[in-house]
Image (cartoon, rainbow, N blue to C red):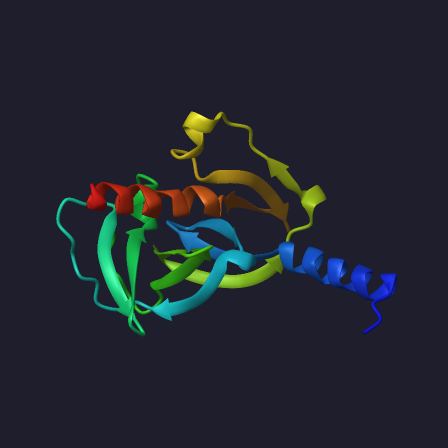
Length: 166
């Protein structure tokens, strides 16, 4: 099979375009963005099984097609008062490598393209990294989206798994 540079360029272009896609969701009337490359799926709110000794923002676990996934209430994790879930509340399933986490959000809006030049990166040291999920800020159509860092969200799952297994 012959692979020419045109094929490689188009694959790189495709990867670049995918990297620029972000899911916009809402928490407390504020817009947040997550890179679509980490999003497995969006599901309706479903019953969550409580697990003792987890931080209060970790609502518990769900069984999604025979896969156990920890679920975090994004409102509570960001220090926003919890509300009753309604028909717009949903769970965004995020995956990185083999780790998965469900993120409960008020509503999912849309998928948009955020070009790197429109993404203002936030700087933080490694210690703050786990505490601060904000990777950057983008302004599109006079609206600001806070871009979340999926790596720091997934690290919560790793920390909880390590705590449970000790």
